[in-house]
Length: 233
Image: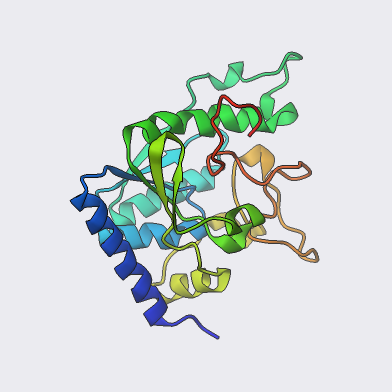
């Protein structure tokens, strides 16, 4: 059954209400996005509710060129304030004791250097973090609440947490929004190029299948609430 416009309108109304509340309490707000097809909904909603909110993109240096082009196209179309974040460790130095690039031997450490650590100063400087995770994407994300605290006393806010993949699809179609160009070439969830694979058309998969292919890993670490100094993410 197609998603209703009332569902979509209610999400926008709730987002606007939360933003007014945060502003009334003088809280500083930011958002993050990975600029996939799934990201388009939240970015479009933010462009309507308040396009001045900074949207941070974790630029690992390993993204597909198509992802960077998609980011730029959405930033222009929605008139968003996009800010790239980079690791403080040059990519050439991101190697293990045997000289191998970390994504080949220690993907958790690679994500920590390129995603978790660069986001830490942003968390420390702000009060509210808006992001577009959905409960249906993974078991880890299914345990989330619409609002909940995270490290550095920041409040996480997930406006589309209860949305299904069908709702995302219907919203994109309703508003004639673009999809990540790699989707048409067989990619589902698109992350960094070395750790993303095309989907097997005959396999069962969820929204994040194809990420960290062959590894016991489903999250980069930014959506886990342990302190980055407390070991593996």
